[in-house]
Amino acid sequence: MIPCILLALGGNLINGPGSSKLGFKTTAAIIFGRLVLVPPVGLGIVTLADKLGFLPAEDKMFRFVLLLQHTMPTSVLSGAVANLRGCGRESAAVLFWVHIFAIFSMAGWMVLYINILF
Image (cartoon, rainbow, N blue to C red; front, side, top):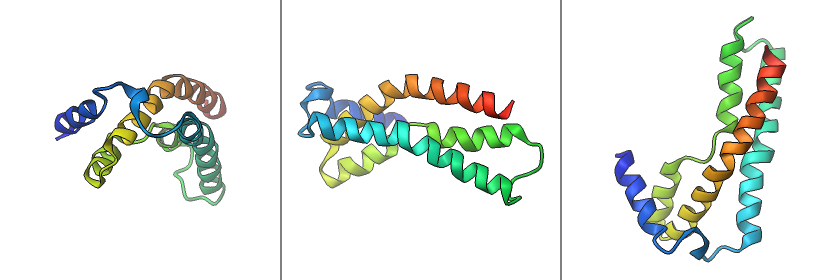
């Protein structure tokens, strides 16, 4: 199913990722919120869960995976849902740029998480 969804998203990007109706500020705000604001919130949630004793003791890899899930870019399946709602071109453009910038943000957040945990 995933290859079909990727094909549909690629079809929405036929004119390039800059052809959506969303402005630059809106796209930048979505990228900033997803890749810069969500990971610290996830770090706070995982830290709070650890302090309250909800996480297994001394399992650093489990904590790393929990932190990593907040760092991942938006799911491609959200683009499929947006395509069904009629705003596939805008969603495809945002997903394209989020995944491009996630390469750099994920590297930075992973370095921080490894320094905190290990």
